Amino acid sequence: MQTVWRGMDLATLDREYNARASVPDFDAEYRRYVALSAEARTALPMHAGLVFDPPSGNALDWFPGAPGGPVLLWIHGGYWRALSRSDQSLAAPGLVAAGAHVAVMDYSLAPGATLDRIVHQVRTALVWVRRHAAEFGADPARLYAGGSSAGGHLAGMLLAGGWHAEYRFPQHGLRGGIALSGLFELEPIRLGHINAWLHLDEAAARRLSPLHLIPRDPPAPRLLVSYGGRETAEFKRQSEEYAAAWQAAGHAAQVVPQQARNHFDLVGALGDGSDPLCRAAAAFMQGE
Image (cartoon, rainbow, N blue to C red; front, side, top):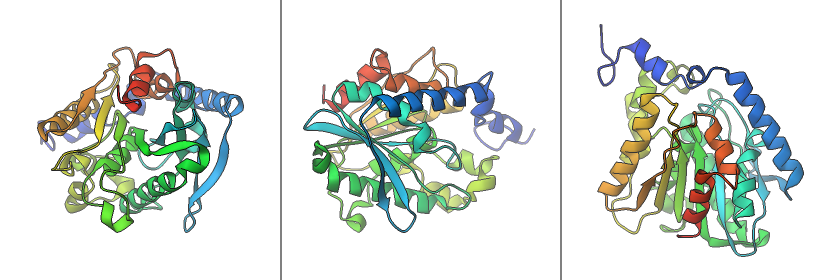
């Protein structure tokens, strides 16, 4: 057996990162995304289709919270090649009920867009949200970013150090990040089947890995990570090791595992005001 990553052969590595195969029925999980998101878009006030990146036409939907409340930029998953803001509105209801504003964004999808381009769009969105937060009743000084799976990776790229000056974004303009089942180290992604549409080389995998971009000097944004107990070992490891590295750098991080959840229903938990994960995220954004 030829090992390619942490003692795993290629077939094992691909199984570990095959999120769809980790649940009995992915299509049912996706239908749930769509149904819960449709409910949220019907039930909640929403400013829809706010274009934050004119060159690409990418937009976000803004779900208002309490006056002066924090705002969360939410980034969808889908391994950088699938899903959209319209089927991720399910992340909003619980947090909005707790007083937070939630802005759910789109980005251009791979392989049509490189991962560098996607990261650029996400940073452009964060700049836009900060600039316009007060117009929608949010506090621009209480800005958070979050995402699930590939969206967790992209949230990590907002938490990363070293990009702020280029975008004229304040060094400490982001209060914290919420990452669900994120991908923070991309070398195993480069080595497996997902690289068929990402086309990462070794240098790009390291350059775009949040694990290697943790800010050196405090104060850094606070971090909350979560993952499902029914996920594969690699998804769990990625979250645990990212949080541990954040803490080792002297920054605040907490891990809120959800043992009864899988890779996909974590987002629904975030949108349910009675769920422990939603309550933890709401408290996190209130600074509690």
